[in-house]
Length: 162
Image (cartoon, rainbow, N blue to C red; front, side, top):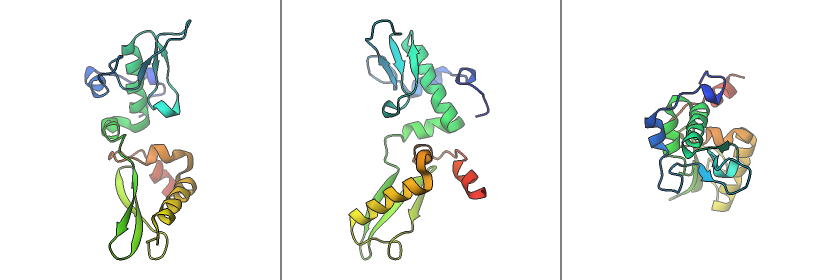
């Protein structure tokens, strides 16, 4: 997206419907706080990654969450949001050759070449290769690039042109 701040990103009722849940606050990524002196609701688009802020109402916090997703993944953010819980990699056993690694880079299924002819003798070897590959090739950008939603963030395109 070309907008400079989260506040400039428009949020519609259809956008809010995507993150609706049956939780106490009614929205994914919006949590009630109980600390005195703070706003009563916290927005955390990714629970384990922190971020977000404190807001007076669940609706305001939910708007922040939607804006965060829109800024991170562009107009097709809904696709990534829908697939957010699906693991973006897997280790599979081949019937004849051992184990191989598959990752989803910006939603595109890719077979990683590694080991002997792209296969590994054990699952542990394949998983070890995967962890090293993610750290070496993607680093801090792994959460942005590894997902099953078909959204092009442009990160991989920039890396290939350097």
